Image (cartoon, rainbow, N blue to C red; front, side, top):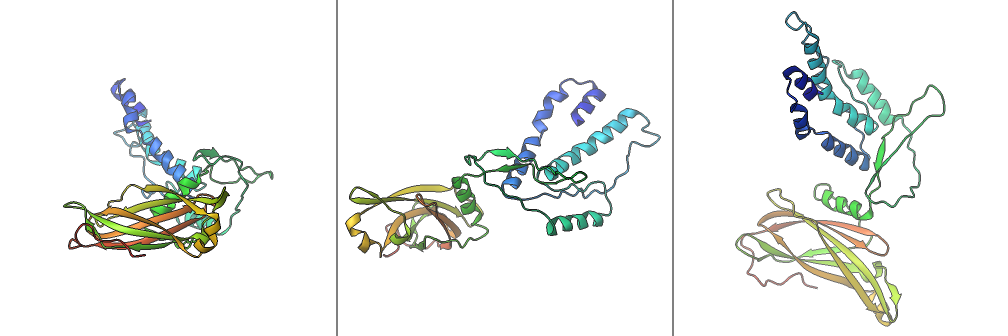
Length: 304
């Protein structure tokens, strides 16, 4: 709207063509989708409060000036309204005293309906519209207008990443994590040995001829001492056990060894271990300090 107003004022037909370069609508829609996916409701507040129309003066008697002021205000507040309404919240605009609005917010947080239903969709990480209607006349329902049905892969990925900052203590697979002595990889990096233990008794194994087979999916991410985060690495580990040996093996741990590249300093390691057959997931985090005086290359990893 600001670009349209500027085009009319300066008679420049190219301004509207340049508007998309500065259009942040897609970014705000991304915020809305992420908020709805995470169950977050946005109550946006315009901290500017109630403002005076600067165009109402002797110097600005023309209607064009009033339109410019309206367009500017609408440009600043439209996305606040959009984010609030789409997530089931309220935009608090043009108010110097927001106490009544905060009381309404308190009522929203203490008195509400939680509705649920079983979705028949595939969970393909796509947004879906939600429309809540009231049968009784005179009542209106305020609710989020869309939801994102996350796939199991997306949920695990997000949980592994968020555990770098907000630790998780979910460990149904009784996973153990050990770290060894870092070894120099090059002049700037070190390889840190890690060992993951999972009791065979917690892993789902299905018969396949004379053998029992299963699969674990491992997820790794590291946050280093300067705040840089590694890419999330994923490893699929097939597991096979002879059926006749399972009773003895079930009392032992499945062991997976790996080496992760890290720089010197404090590190935060977050891993997830998923049983591919049951979708049971364990989350483990560990703080690691890599010293610049760590041992030479070839240092042994964690001991069994």
